[in-house]
Amino acid sequence: MAVYTDLTDEQLTDLLSDYDIGSVLSLKGIAEGVENSNFLLTTEQNGHAEKFILTLYEKRVNPDDLPFFINLMSHLAESGLPCPVPVKRKDGSTLSHVAGRPAAIISFLEGLSLRRPEAVHCHALGAGMAEMHLAAQRFDMERMNNLSIDAWPGLYDTSRHNADTLHAGLTDLIDGELARLKEHWPDTETALPRGIIHADLFADNVFFIGEELSGIIDFYFACKDMLAYDLAIVLNAWCFETNTSFNITKARALMDGYNSVRQLSPAEIEALPVLAAGAAMRFLLTRLHDWFAPQEGALVKPKNPLDYLHRLRFHKKTESAVEYGVEL
Image 1: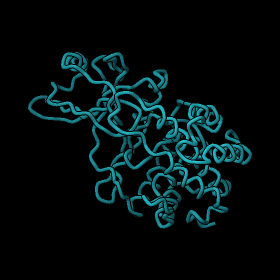
Image 2 (image 1 turned 45 degrees about the horizontal axis):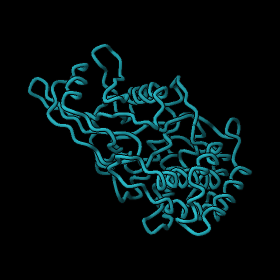
Image 3 (image 1 turned 45 degrees about the vertical axis):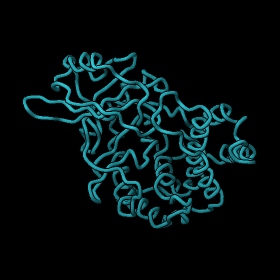
Image 4 (image 1 turned 120 degrees about the vertical axis):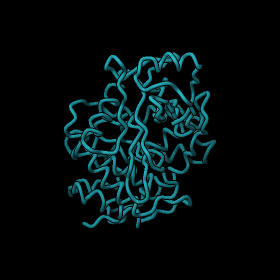
């Protein structure tokens, strides 16, 4: 989450007049993430204060995708998952328009995003993600992954000419890995179980109260893809330390948590090394793009692409899912 678009008092008042959530007490920008403008909105109604999240969808979000994202959150929350609930306007719809941007107000979830999650949190996240995958099987809308392997070469073209200025030899390394991944990537339509995935379950998109998972947020990359690919994304995001070392204890806890709810198939387990390398490549390329073309008005600095170069190198040397803590 981040803030790129500010609101005037008049714009905010006009927006809230379409909702039955009271009058505004405060509005504070949330300086996290890279995609949309997000605010912590506090309102007062009948003497009671209540918190919400106001999101303004920026230019990189396709407005046509918004009904999918909003309805998915509603479906998952109705299925019992700790997800935000979109707030309905007085006319029954959930999407608004303000400051030239599509917008939505969603419920506020209690909890903390952890900067240094432990194995117990990885286990809880694995179980929660599996529950999300199962619940989403009953969701009747689809959105294809616009950042799948087929999109990576085009994405790389936007920053290819700058890559070696960030790290010597990066261009050749990415070229070689893109070719290797294309050769070994599972057939996305038939090889592995597919469904709706979150595709961006980083630590700042997950809340805990103590050791209990209390919230999964920010579904704006959600799409239909291989379920095990979602697990590979989380493996990259949660199981490497700040010194780039791989923490197999966290990885084993993540896998055990997932398998406690939805058992991975032998084919999914076998594919984990290439899926993990692909997930590392996806975030290396998007971070590389953002590094050289940061969004104007962002309150957060682009994240270092080289964090995912280290992960990619690790996965390239990985021969079996056993090295991720999976029991074959």
